[in-house]
Image (cartoon, rainbow, N blue to C red; front, side):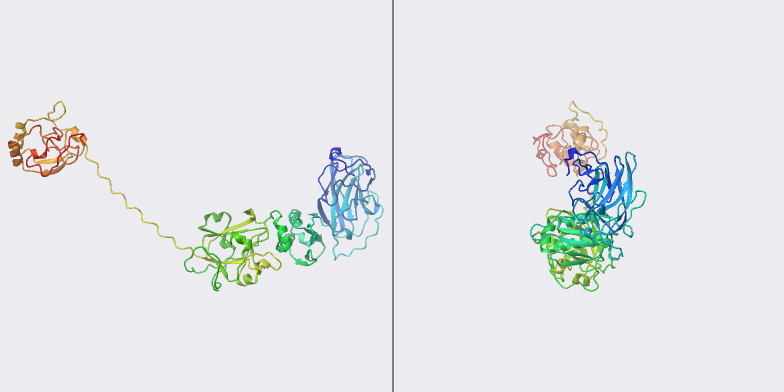
Length: 593
């Protein structure tokens, strides 16, 4: 009987090896079943739960932790010989040894026992119980596999009574040291008429696999209703619902992964796989050496859909994994192409003939989206591609690739960086049936089209105009209150008669007009001073002579003598200036529209 947790105290003894059924710290009871030398049918947690340790007959060192010692400071180790039960631990035939501890408060200790050959515990686990004679227990699930090659004397029907503690325990003839492997126990059966598949894996296949990795794969297979058993056999096999078998070889992980792929390709297994969590990535195969680069083929078209055409010629390079830049390198792709259509389940639903091809340019990122029932391999040549031979292939992405989302939890993305041919296929299925049914693709990679020439640079801007000469101080002149020189008609006539005015000029800026000089003015026209004088005689000017030319609001002056007098008023038309009307236009008053 197991009391409620609130009645339990912190555990005072717990197994370290074999791995205990649970790390629960409440493993004792006051119902009387465990008291003194008796504890016949109590282990604290439900039978069949927790990890399973695989052993072979022979010596085994049992280790445990004493969290608090109690008199009489003794511990009993028993092995139940009936699978999936927790009873008969008090039977002397099930006794493996008795250990006398110390009176220290807490310590680690161990005891060596002999594991007998126990055929009944080969396929389903039995229970090893460690009992502190004070009433604390710790239990482990163990399977005992007898190597077929071992010559072992039949164990007696009952073990002899335990010897004194000072003497080593007596048991069957010693074999090689027992092998410890902790593999979770699976009890998952498929709803309906089918129960479960059984995958038998040789103990030797665990040599290159950690218990943690084996536990991950065992739990994944359990999710698809497949029980894993370690056995002293030379080859692995899986027994299916219909009693058919499939043979496997390799390490534990390779066998488990291959079995999982086959299950996912079975009619009932595909739906089972779809409901299971993501798998860890499969270890990639070492890439083969890359072949030499081919000579550049014809210019590249843009990525296109699958097309049927003759296979590439013999001299076209078959590309290896080194031609694919996966991961962060895909961000620099010049183009992107998803293999397959969403309506046909992307890579999961690609079906093509052996001669179909997909043509892309160097620098294109290829995306493969798929579910847990598929993978992606790179095949080394045309023969392997046509025969779906994966013996020398390189895995690019496994069943548990990850990186995707939703219906397509797996995503492989890589950029092709050289011309050639990629031969890609899925390895899942019995006898690689996915590949045989058309889940393969030949990708022909052609050089990128030459980049268009950049547009010519814009013409340089015209050189800046040289700055005008600096303003010079104004000429000495007589100025009235308005700041302008004033002369009367008689004086002006005298100057004209004397030929003082040889040209008419355009003052550049208003500042110069206002400053009263024409050092930087532009020569506009020469004129006949005699005629101008005659005009002045025949038609006296009604006001001081204006200096005004073409540029609006600028001044027009007579060089080297006369400063500007007034801006020309709109009332003074050029017709009143005989001899000057032709080359000039009518000016405006300052500020006039």
